[in-house]
Length: 350
Ligand SMILES: [Zn+2]
Image (cartoon, rainbow, N blue to C red; front, side):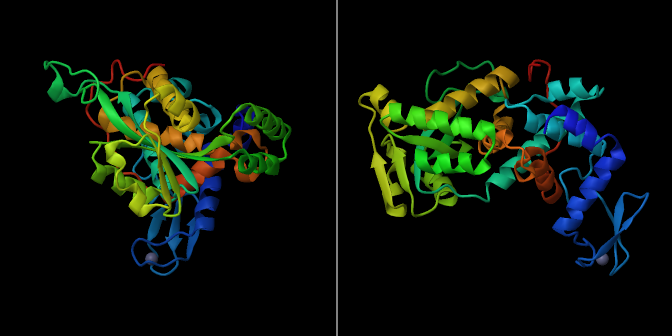
């Protein structure tokens, strides 16, 4: 959805309320008091009323907007910006665009949206064939490390460890997805993909991705996450690090390409995981500057959610409308993220 369409669809707070009410009714409103699933809409009160016990259920109860003082249209506008702009977006930019005086509620809104994006992604598993690697993302020096000598390389206090899992698929299956969208842009992209696959020896393209901030690189830590997020019947491709020792016990096959010749492995065996790491790390650094480790996962959530739906922008079909998808997620997940009293002065570059 582009800006002029947003203005046309949601000119007022009331139009946003009606839209969100309809989405909630289609998803089913459950009464938090009696568990009943029938209700009626109370005009003028922005609430449903349970027909079983009469309890009044606010429109945003049980959604990501619960407890927010911002208007629904502000949330819609932020969701529109987040889904219509290809890059990740800073809260400072949203605050500026919406001319909101206070930064904390905007920051909180954005972080909550990033948190529900992660919740949504966690219901899916990767499959077929995945590339897996660990990456290091720059972070703001933690409070307890300030004044200490900063270590370099692995173990540095200014880096966070991130596990990156990337599903790579034969070009054919991605082509089919592009062609199924039948827009001029998607057909053009399919053509480009065919041309580039002829030039590549690997003939695979990246599909869905997942990224997780991890505290350590132990085999136990990695196994736990990978087993949860990757289907059993999957081929795992790694650089053969000692943290990956148990993958062959759990998955269909574990292909290990030890990086004797780093260039070779990166280009032929683990190409996409490195592309994704580079793109995400640069995007976060460019928009947010130095991020605090406790928030890094939220930024990764936004990057992965958008990356996994990157084809959708080219489609005019309503079912691929990213804004609608985010509003639907907003209606069924809550977030417990709270405002932290924190010095944001040089965080999040506009
Ligand atoms: Zn009830």
